[in-house]
Image (cartoon, rainbow, N blue to C red; front, side, top):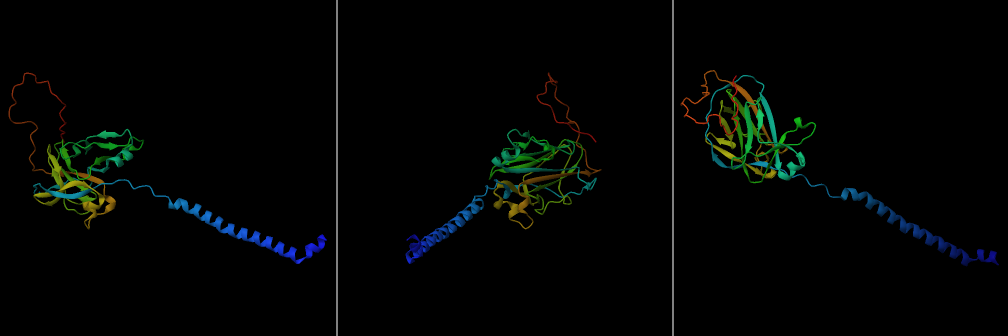
Length: 277
């Protein structure tokens, strides 16, 4: 009886129906498995990228009166006495770069201490310069935090009896010519015991365009043919000692006799040095 049932058409039909159902189940599961595999492999690429760090550039600001004249001077050497750079950025980005306990200064000493370099805010106060305290910190540049729209000034103070030529760049552009920065460019003359304030990109012998922190898209370097956006966020300075045999020396003391003082030893603060050759 069992053997006849096995050979009957009904049994063969039932067996084919069961095999077809099993095949259908396998076929419906295969696309689901492929879809799950594709979704899993696509998940990492679909994750949002980390936000780019905030960045500042320097804008061509309003006109400021700044008179200058052309002089002839000769460098003592083709090699600069000092080349230095400062980085700048928005405050949170600077904190991320320098860490929680950075080294802080108000100026940098250039040319073995002959010249002090500082960056002043709109109230003529020096902006703090910060550098991470790491083992290789000597190779890391100092950084300053800027605020979008704020104006700043580069100040160079000569503490020596030497004359220097100062070449300054902002975002890779020479502050005198607006061209790409180069040590072959001419610069400002800094006389002994004098202070040089560079307030902007020079427009003429009587006017400069103020330095103002701005978004990179508004930076002068991003809107002039000579600029390169890769250099936005860095300020450079180079010093060359000058040969000026006929230049008058600033007297070391005031020729006017000083007024008598009842307490001549009571100075309030230590005076800066005045280096001799």
